[in-house]
Image (cartoon, rainbow, N blue to C red):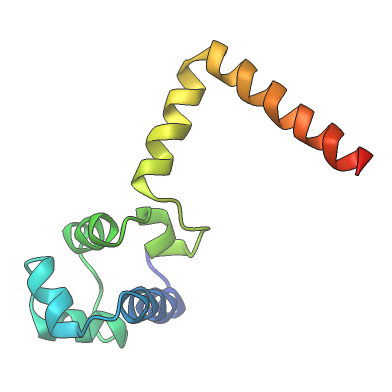
Length: 110
């Protein structure tokens, strides 16, 4: 169940993403195969976004659906793939941890 306030916040996030990309509501609607009316209604919290709409927005802007819905830190789909690769490759994980540790040591020395 979506709380009324969360619709307002989601609409604000959508509007900010759109403004950051410097596109109009009409351009966004065209790019995600939606209508201007739907984009406007969601930005102003006059209607609930469908799951399909949220997925399209996520793909178009390259952010997670969690960011659209909850405002979590935006993570691009490319970053999610990288995280998945690291999670499933213990050798890569070890190398990244070693690299991060060496950078911490360098920062402590400087």
